[in-house]
Length: 136
Image (cartoon, rainbow, N blue to C red):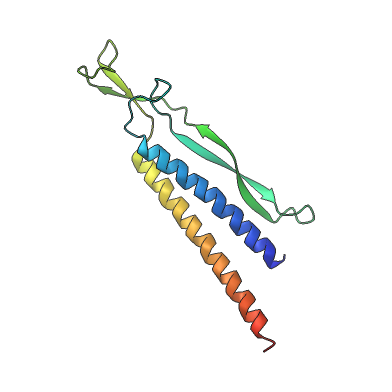
């Protein structure tokens, strides 16, 4: 495996984790939104990663790519608030199905993965520089 593959793999992971972080930020920002542009509460969304082979000759060496964004199908949270104008006839207001604690854990995981890939790229870059200095 060449070092250019290392940068390609790490780059694909950085792109995927960046998209994951953006989605987590969107979920946290809308965690308390009782309504959205569709009239329904916001539904949490998650990314789906897929391993993508770097080359056909080495299918075991793979990067990662976000292949889709899926909505969380868990039911909305219900809050009893009969004074709220969005309350139904029983007095319950539908709230998004986003759990801020889970989103924070997901954000920490994505941030650490992003940081690990940056460190790996820095290490590969340092190794390349030291290899070039061998001839001096």
